[in-house]
Length: 319
Length: 196
Image (cartoon, rainbow over all chains, first blue to last red; front, top):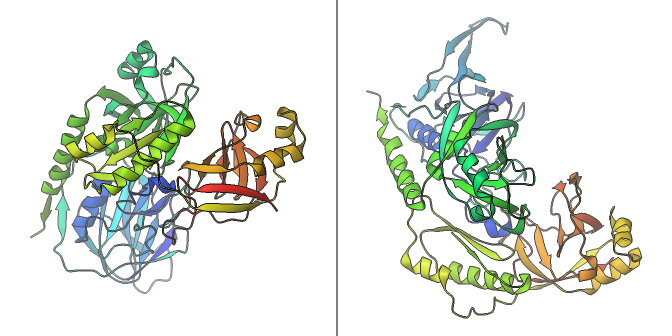
């Protein structure tokens, strides 16, 4: 089964659950920014949770299907049409366009295309295809590290993508809560250098909204708000960092590290967004805001396990 | 979970590498990744997993650490014609050939790999060559650039933005995802630079 990329959209990449475990070689894990949306998309089409899908950003791609396939869209809701040529017509304008369902697997026929337009909600959407996207494994994963040009694929016009072996499964639908809101509350645990910031500025950090700026991508999201002030220089001896870390460079404005972050960083970190809330950050667009709430590592782990069970319960077979 | 070591950067880094080896050898099932830094060790847990008592104990262990394993030795051929070589020489009050002599005369230890895939942070730079990073990083540093900043020297494996001062270049391939391990240089390896 082959997919043809008619238009790549703003930034569309192949992603799976990422490649953890290579930090000591300088390699960040990459993988889907909204992990729950990736997993749900895969289960909807009958794939393993970690199969590779297409992650698209703000404006999606147009994809043509050379043969019939079961697909599903998750993550933020985008303006998506299924395009079907009117038989006998050679004119491109003579197409039937129907709106594609969200969070529901469905069949597309040979020759049909999916036109994913602008987002109707948050930053990222996911397209899973039964069988998964089959690009070569790089360090055990099909994920794309965009900044390091490592693994996976950044979609370009004219690209052909193959899918893996499909297995039979019923069509399914999901009722995941909408991850996207324009003002998100993110729970954080204390960062490794939280005590080198001036207490007054840390209090302002927890009581003020921070705006997501246009300088935001899979590497990191630059935020704008009351600056964090340090007792000392922001430079530290470089150390391993995690996705979700809020590092503070010299201007005091936080950078929220994403999945394509560097493996190590030399800036002080005030806090870390917990994994169970990273999908909220992943869906934020420039202009949206974050507010930060303190929590503990124990709560963070429990919240992850709870969410890991909750999303599965929202998926049901369609009779 | 992060363990930090005090003291000189050389001693702290040696301890961080030794504990990295220990934790890796422990094969703790709750650990997703172990990442040494300049003077730290980051243990990343599998999401949702509780750290075992054994892991917490191993990470906090204050017993005298064994020496980190001895690394491999590498000789890396360098063409010393970096864009910042003249400026580095001026700010260090020496001639460019003195910079080359000092840089290639020293023996370096790979402290850790970071920033981007395969980028080695090497300790052992002669003190006379300690220069600050550029105030404004370059948008694109050519792949293979040999550079210095503060107490480190390093090599850019790929063309990326970067703020270190460029003194030379090498043809060596530092990162190959098809190799095991993918990074040519490992923490603890010993490096000498040989003028081409």
